[in-house]
Amino acid sequence: MNRRTMLGVTAGATLGLVGISAADAPRPLPDPSPAKLPRWRGFNLLEMFMSPNVQRFRGDDFAQIAELGFDFVRLPLDYRSWTDPNDWTKLREERLKWVDEAVELGRKHRVHVQINFHRAPGYTVAQPSEPKSVWSDSEARDVCALHWGHFAKRYQGRPNREVSFNLFNEPANVGPAPYKDVVARMADEIRQHDRDRLIVCDGRDWGTKPPTELVGLGVAAAARGYAPFHLTHYQANWVQGSDKWMKPAYPLREGGTTWDRSTLVKDQVVPWKALQAQGVGVMVGEFGAYSHTSHPVVLAWMRDCLDTWKEAGWGWALWNFRGGFGILDSDRADVTYENWHGHKLDRAMLDLLGSA
Image 1 (cartoon, rainbow, N blue to C red):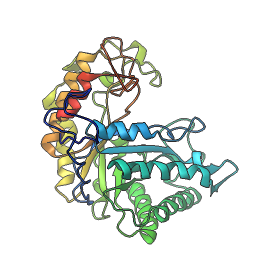
Image 2 (image 1 turned 90 degrees about the vertical axis):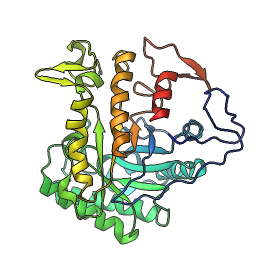
Image 3 (image 1 turned 180 degrees about the vertical axis):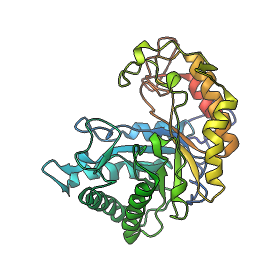
Image 4 (image 1 turned 45 degrees about the vertical axis):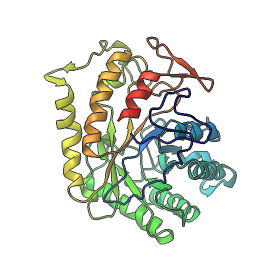
């Protein structure tokens, strides 16, 4: 991948990034469009992922992501973080400023910031579920539009190379018609305040199905990279029964399917390339494998994923930077970590991501 360095980082320092000198200036972020997204590469940052356990985003994360040569972060947000608990139409300015800080950190370090409602008014994949559904309830739809409209006003004038909006995380249990209706409503609300804001929409069925119903709405699309699920979520404590799965290998034989590179292309790339051919830009908004899957298996699977996405021209974001899916502090039992800026660095995974 294209590498960048910050002043004071030399080509042999800490990570041994080849061919870069301290004098290299950071490259400007690319300009995206709904029809063609840049090949962003980066991470999800989870500070405001699930209320009430939320906190400010960390400046060190942005600086280190840039230092390592990446240029993208996705912020999965829980709307309850900035909402009055007694009135979901009232927004708390002191919490919204945390998102402002992240956007500014992105601008400072030349890292694109994608704002995602992981829990939106009226929809979430997490528990507990929302009491009213944005897909069917007019009040939930109005409140969700109010929130997205506020974000549009808030970042009006910020160039798309710095900020994009990702409306809903992995919409599930919704058909194409209601999904299209809700996306159109949110896009209209956003564009009333910020006409050209880049909007990216996850595929339906937990991000796995290309949203062909959105063609013509002027939005881009985001896929997922979690297949095969028994490999990526082995012993994940939030997945019921995953502690009883057989230890995964790669290639993975599952029923009548052998998950290998050719299967990944057929199942995870070809359908999305068909969507791209209709004028919709594509990226992979989340991917990764949890820390209980053996490290050699994860790297072999990840190499095939990254190679196929590179061939397709798609960017991607690992589910986290620090933590069980990430390159820092993942606590894998079978990795010899390096000490880097006070973190435990998975050098092998970093090198793989850095070459993609």
